[in-house]
Image (cartoon, rainbow over all chains, first blue to last red; front, side, top):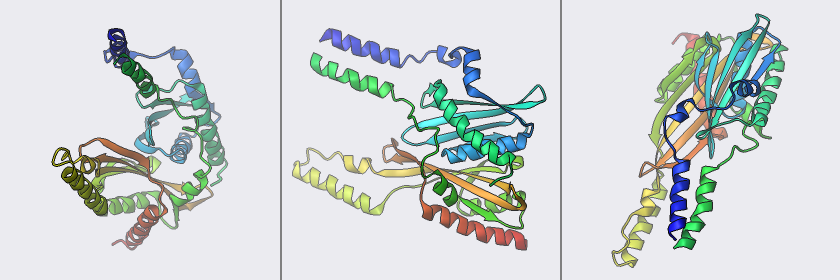
Length: 135
Length: 185
């Protein structure tokens, strides 16, 4: 009985370790950037940000913050779970735009490459329609 | 007792390991219908005029503006509102009363009443942009979410609002505000 109780306490402690390490925790920076970034062959920041907004609304997000100058958008999706997402747009070598998205699912960062592939698949379509002036 | 503790383990692990649903970043089959429900087109207006009319409507409805970014046509607003239902309140009070009487006053905990929805936080994003193939028209899309809290302040429900009548009612008020904006009232 004692052992089971001790095991329970240990698991709870491991699950709830709320120390300062979570502030700067994270995986490999280069790998994470790769899966979170997609490059688009355009320099139109406004149209790209509008496509990001349309994508987020299509996926059921509400926009928390949007800044045109800094090209940053933060949004939240509420269902049985909560997803918070930040999308930034940055110029690459004055030729293209990098769109980077990072998401948190409840209390954990989303690191599954497939999740970002899904997101960018929806954004790809929105970008195509925007850049070809199709509503 | 030890057996009971062991039974708890999987429950704890499941709660700690809720995983991202596979469809979290995929368009649902109803995405197009939802987009149509949440979108309206306004003619002969600039997106700035639409944002101005939208702000007026949101103020009429008691919202506070949280975020506005004119170059992108983004406007987010929120309000806290009552979430109680009169019928449910009467029902749960009756159930609590009956439980109290039939337990000879040993179970007068008011549990059913405390689980009732109490308040809701409503958040809304409105995005206006010029129509891509006709710059004179403005496309407006709204998405609404709400979080409902029970009488004890516990999270009861969180959801994206997908209700045709809610969006229709909002756009009805928008049309009037747009008219007033055009008339300069």
